Length: 65
Image 1: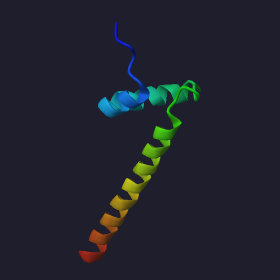
Image 2: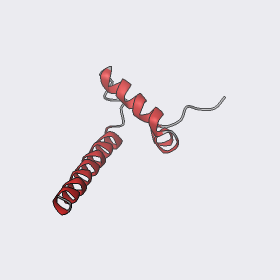
Image 3: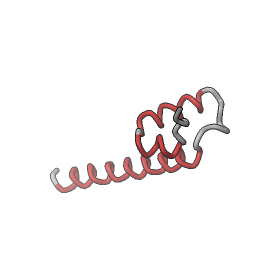
Image 4: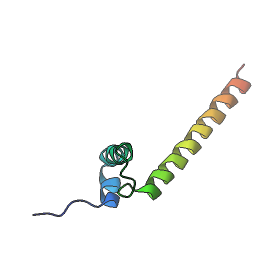
């Protein structure tokens, strides 16, 4: 019988499954089981991505108005 995948293994191999698992843990209040470090990194990454997208769109609007 194989052992369950670690949080890091799941994150590395199936991000969608990892994200859904983390969301379920957060919603159920099981914060001690959630991977807070990776969740925080993903939130920061999303914020940076959104900022880059906004900057790119503003650049296009300014250059091509």
